[in-house]
Image (cartoon, rainbow, N blue to C red; front, side, top):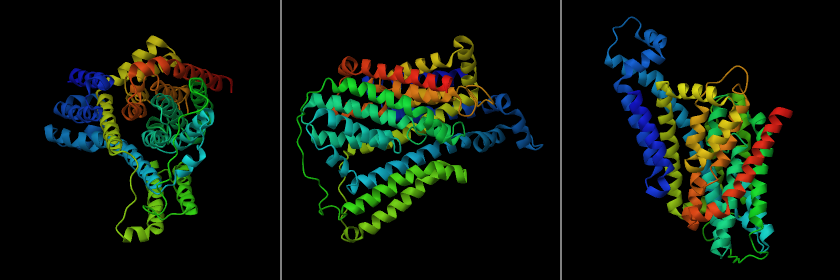
Length: 456
């Protein structure tokens, strides 16, 4: 049964990695892996439980005669629900942040970005829009941030090639911005929620590598753009027809939303409660502010128009289901003991976490970066000392390498896939024009991270 579960996991990995060519929905693959894996596990639950949890199971029996029913109840209550809880915490956080950015976007709070980048100068437009993306994605979901910024860019730039280049820079900025904070990337969020890293230490070490991985490729991309861009500036849709918020009200909502997210690490440190609870608190406050500012509009039964394409809104739901399925699937793999054996083999074979990090980054280029990152952080338990202790080097290497490595090929990150759908970017074009640039920034960022960890 362990072999069957492993083969299911390998098949899911291959289908996810080749999803761009086969058209198979990776969220469906992840959900099937997460459900079918646990069904197989339960069918032979006694063997797995006696191998992994013998003492806990005997204590659970309390002198009762073991049978198939008791072992199933034990798996459900003491093994399965633990992984469901971890997955649900990440999903709830993503749902809250996606809802926050949707509220802000529907009320025109990000119109300031369009005003800020109002220029035909390629250098100014590229750096302002990517800087805004970098900052926003550090606090919000990468996919939602990328989608929003791509919509803004699409409404401004007229040339398809220019949109592909600037869109690629936006994807990279969102990825790098997300990986330097514990709430900007799902893998970092998992590590933070499990107490493996602390927010301030993590960001202090990851900020400079993330900046390098974003700035260097963006400089190279800028060289391929003409001095003057083909732009068309349309009037903002928020002038009283679909929202009645004035500028200061939009600023208040933006402050509540983004400022509230900045407070989540402090909330977690004070209460020790899961970060998603802080995100839900921010969402509830923002929701109340939204209803207070738009009470007349709501009473008139008029709602703000959504500017994000519905196909990509559906994509965010798929991302939530994908994360849930992968985390459940990884949980059953961990319970079989196979991941621990793979971790031991890798440690004995390579003896170097930096080589593992480079390998993980290259694998993220063809497979989903979240799947690869989650796999690598679940290979090893938290140690008392060394590179796998709390705030150890291994965890930061994996978060950075898998996140940025996912941008080497556009199919490796969910944000990259969104770019391919919106701007019809071909894999061959991305490989010729972007892969080498991203690789330079990724390797330089790894070098900076190595220097920080060994010299500071």
